Picture 1: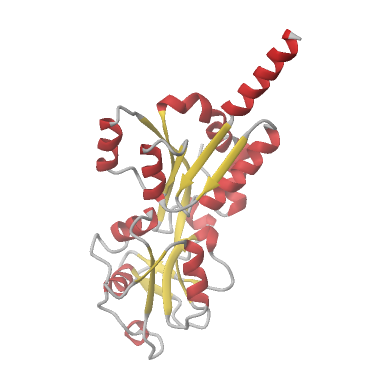
Picture 2: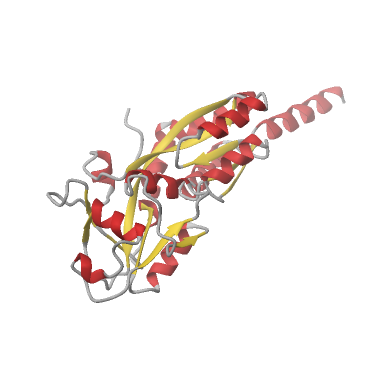
Amino acid sequence: MKTKILLAALSLYTTVSLAQKLKGSDTVLPLAQKEAEGFMKTNKAARVTVTGGGSGVGIASLIDATTDIAMSSRKIKMGEKIKLSDAGKASKETIIAYDALAIVVHPSNPVSQLTREQMEGIFTGKIKNWKEVGGSDMAIVVYSRESSSGTYEFFKEKVLNNKNYASSVLSMPATGSIIQSISQTKGAIGYVGFAYVEKEVKALKVSFDKGKTYTAPSLVTAKDKTYPIVRPLFYYYLTTVEKNVKPFVDFCLSAEGQKIVEDVGYVPLTK
């Protein structure tokens, strides 16, 4: 009888210790979901739940201790670090993959490439018509992620040189919403993680050398760094739960986990 009780207790402990929540970046979301599926197949006691909401939401949940792992497409901010410190908490950062950020338009749009300067002009509101960048006489409808999104902040820093988005830019709550809106709007433009690019939208070639060379987003160009808009994707977790989350994090970093990274459409870590 005592043996059965002990085994039951051990079984309960195993299940609890492998139960964990991930929350945050919509960019990381589809990757984390697939990683969780793979992890749970080989760890039958594991229970991993994954939800989006944006990088800022994930890190806020980490600070509030309502998630075990915060998924983020940007580095943690100083203000967030201070909040953790004030709460007496220490966190760890792990890069789990890389992502190419694609600039997408409606498939019927004749424009196939843009310079960084042209993209800056479009998203800051200086360029308002496609004819200004070699396209049709058609108003540009600009879509962006919400300000809580790490992708929003990365794009502002990398592409807009930290200039503000135009007030006319339409903020969307999720990457899927941007894809859907652009697929239904001929004059639209937006940005999404490369893994989200589907036939309903067209990814543009971009130039960061004032038009000398243009490169399309792909796993190959992201890996060899010829595509200029690539960023790391992060997991953040508290040191107090490290023992609990480490098996899952280690799986994501393993050869099997990194194969999932590539299968889903992200860029694996180079060894």
